[in-house]
Image (tube, rainbow, N blue to C red; front, side):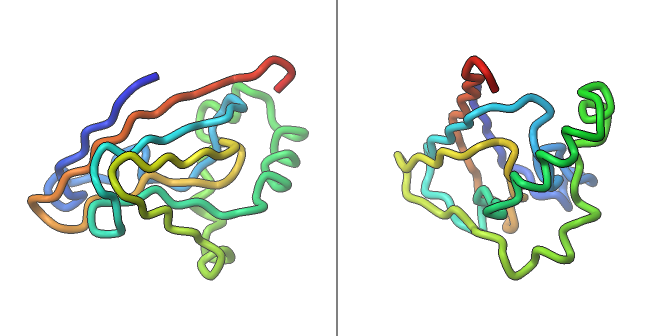
Length: 129
């Protein structure tokens, strides 16, 4: 369990934060996000592409965990073909998003100066995953 407090735009930081790269998680898990602020596209709501776990399953058959953990989890290069399928998970403070972390996902960037985003993130790795 950890929390995230984002308040700097990508332009202010001068680089894209690690969570703002399209990816799947190196370790399989059920992930829960609890929004502590109203969260929308302007302050960087979480996004995912449904039904991409099938592709991740194929990656896991052909790549070792070490390869995945180095940079194999990054699927930024595949995202052009999924642009029309992206789901933006906006929500009010107290909303929760639960998803399989083998789904392509991204924690988006804050788009406007002066905004913030606070989230509690829970990784749950059930036995047998």
